[in-house]
Amino acid sequence: MRAAALLTACLISAGAQAGPFLDAGDGTLAGVPLGTPEAQAVPELLVIFGTAKDTGWTIGCPHDGLDVRVLSWGSLYAEFQEQGGRPVLVRWSYLLDSGTGEAFLDGPEPADIRLPGGGRVGDTFAEVVQGYGGQPSVDENFGVAFFVGEGFAIGTYQPDVTAPITQVGVPTFGFCN
Image 1 (cartoon, rainbow, N blue to C red):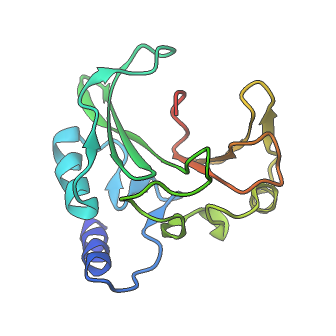
Image 2 (image 1 turned 90 degrees about the horizontal axis):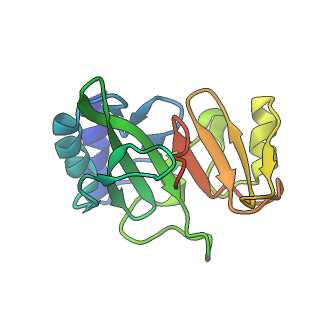
Image 3 (image 1 turned 90 degrees about the vertical axis):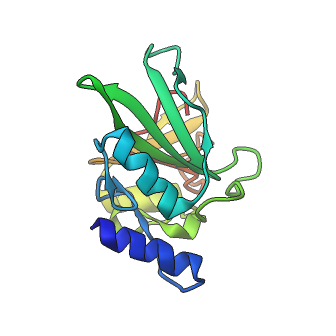
């Protein structure tokens, strides 16, 4: 699987049309499995996506009290935390700019994200959730609509299920995203 992810990255950097390469349903970030030790995952992700913005190890979300390291490429975020005494890749998120609804520069485009069932970032939230046979949740306090599936989450920046999908989290969103 990792060889396929590296091949995809090479095709993309060479300008070839490789299609979607971030599958929110496979438990990996471009072929790097969640749970991969940081020392192994970081170099692999840098080969795939290039230079990242790196927070280094910092105090994470004040609500969970865990230290966190986040690498980002535009709208794509890879989060590391300690599990079982070692730092590992715990989740990835794709978040569009909440002000513009567009992807941040220097990272994958929304079309590069594949959701389970064939949905895409930017598709109407309610239509995609209907395909999962579930009910979306609307949180008026935070002003969002969201759905948590098996191993992934999707959401909008509006408490409106007719809005486009603007957030993806695998296996779920980080609380402070």
